[in-house]
Structures are given as C-alpha cells and as structure tokens.
Figure 1 (spheres, protein in one colour):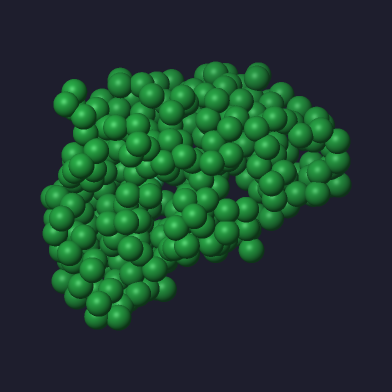
Figure 2 (figure 1 turned 60 degrees about the vertical axis):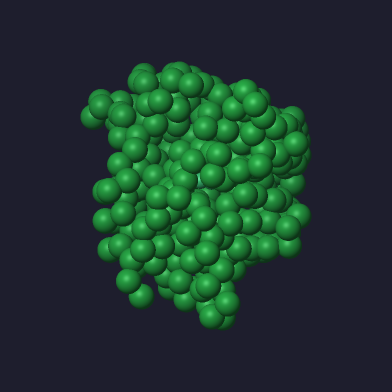
Length: 306
Ligand code: PAF
C-alpha cells in the first residue's frame, strides 16, 4: 500500500473506515510529531502486528498548561512524513482542534466543558499535580482520536507512564482498542528519547543522564532486595537533588499494580520509580518498573498490566 498523507481529519476518518470495511486490522500511533526513534519503534511494531498503520501528528493545545511550551514545541511535518513512509506507515494525518471537535466550540472559540473527557484516578498526583489540566487534555484528544480512527490496536511509549494508565482507562471505558505499551527507547548513554530533547545542548544532554542513572541506581537497590518505599524513594531522589544542572520536580515510587496519588509507605510488592526534572530549558520525565527491565505490555483493562 502506498503512503497517504492528509492535512485534515475527515478524509483520514474515511480512509480508516474503508480499511476496516475491507476487514483489515488497523494499528494506530498517536503522536505530536517531531518524531524520534521512540515513535518509529512504535510504528514498526504496529507494521509488524497489523495490516495497516495510521499515525496522527497533532500538537494538542488542550494538554499544554503553558502557552510558551505549546509555542516552542518542535514541529517538522515534512521530516515526520519522510520518516513514517520509510518505517512502513500507510496513513499520516493531522488536523485542527475545530476539525476534531466540530460541534463543541462556543461563540468565544473555546471548547465546551462537556466535550472534555475525564482522565480517571491515574491523573491524580505527580504529573497531574505538576501540570494542571494536562491529563484532561490527553484523555480528551485520545478519546476523540480513537473515535476517528477506530483502531484495532493503539501503541504508546512507556516513557509517559502515567499517560499510559490514562490511555488504558480511556480504551477500557470504550471497550477498544487494545492498548500496547512499548518499552522506552533510550540513547546509548541511557537518556530516554523525547521530542523535547532536541532543545538540549550537548552539556545539558550530559546533565540529563542523571535521571536514568538515578532510576538505574534505584533498580539496583530493588534487585539487591530492598522493598521499603521510603528507602527506595530516598535512593531515587538523593542523587538527583545533588546533580549539577538538574532542577528536580519529583522523584517518587508507586505500586506498579495500583496507582495512588499519595506516596506509598512500607514494603512494596511491585514498584515503578518515576522522575521529573527541568534540565536547561526543558522539563524531562522518565520511569522504570523496578526489577522488570523494559517489558512490553498489552492491555484492555484500566488497571491490567498483563
Ligand atoms: O504522548 C503524546 O505524544 C501525546 O500525549 C498524545 C498521546 C499523542 C496525545 O496528544
């Protein structure tokens, strides 16, 4: 199948409907563009597992709490299109907010509150506390994208751990698609791939390695047998508090089977370590499920990690 690119939502919706009517399985990778190896790994996985692969490239204003951050978010659609065609993607599309939500704008040009989708309990704490309204914006666009594309499977990266819980919740409520959470793709040095990394200088990229190093140190402690939540959390935050060029936002642990907004205490049966920090002009996040390595996870249920 040849590569198709649409600059608006309606023809993309039609394209997807036709593919499904032909009995094809449809893999979907939602993105905000500025594609990197992490995105391409998701596309390649979809190409492997599905008959056709669709990628959306849409910098969703609803999920930005800082207008400056939205303005500075990197964009290069032509380069994205080239990378997607090479990776075997069949359809790339973008659109505007009014195209995604044609009936939901009031006379002031704002999206009506009724169009917003609740992200559920996994939006509480950490990223949800640091970025007001972010996860409502994510849940709203992901829900709408699922309506437009009707994917069989949707692929997301584990770097956005809390987002992955919210996406699973949105899919579980709708009864589809199957959500595939894929391993974080890292540079050889360990830095988690992110579109925002483009804005780091060489020196800042080196400073940013402190995040994955702190996660690795916490993982090593877990593998040695440490299970106490406070001890693990201290082992995660201490090196980051001292790291040059790193302004720590949070370093925390959570039960990997059950999200809580508050920090857990006492012995843990399963554990995900999560960090967020500002390095130079960029806010970075990263996480690691301790003792597991970078596994892939398929889910329809909100809480399921099977
Ligand atoms: O992870 C992202 O790039 C975005 O949050 C997503 C899922 C494409 C929704 O805008």
